[in-house]
Length: 275
Image (cartoon, rainbow, N blue to C red; front, side):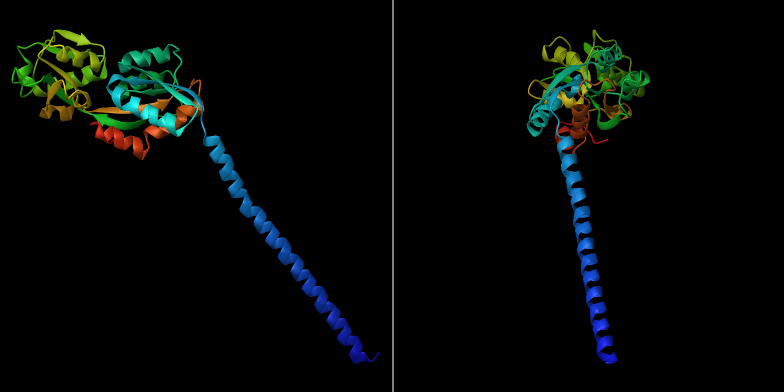
């Protein structure tokens, strides 16, 4: 074989070897890329699976949240088949004490930071509580406002129901009355805002200081009177999953739902204010 032919053959073999090598690298690189692309999808699938919750969820919540949370609880159950939300509504201070004393609960939604602090000080909350709504006071009066109550000063000399001072609505009422320079001696002090509202419904008192949301939810039976000093006694509502929650995953999911746009819209429609 001539020298030229030998050189041509060698070059041809080298070219073929190089092409084969490039093809192998390309296949290997492509296979690696496919494997990498599949990893996020698998992770997302696993994440979605872990996001599913089920079982019982026990929520301790301020009495003023009763109507809205009851409706939201049903929506949460519908969105999470297999869950069952049970509520314990009452005065925030009493609920906080129950939690600290070991009552089994997954979530606590309080009507004031002070009552939530009872829980966080006892290290009974899982993480930092978040304020999800705010609420202001109104004067609740019987339909037609027979005593012609126009403001806090008109509460002197008539029968008034207030929440007890250790309850968030009672603490807020005292702030508002002090801001107005008005001294009111209530005929009854109730352990939660619904108790104070009921006294007006039954005609046992002429007026009561309750939340705007309670007046709105009971508009068929009572009227509400706004007063400027309410701006000095606005209550923040914090919520937290609890450290010893029997159903920690569902507790976290419920808290996240309450902070969602859907839940926030429902709370705003009920008269609550965005935080």
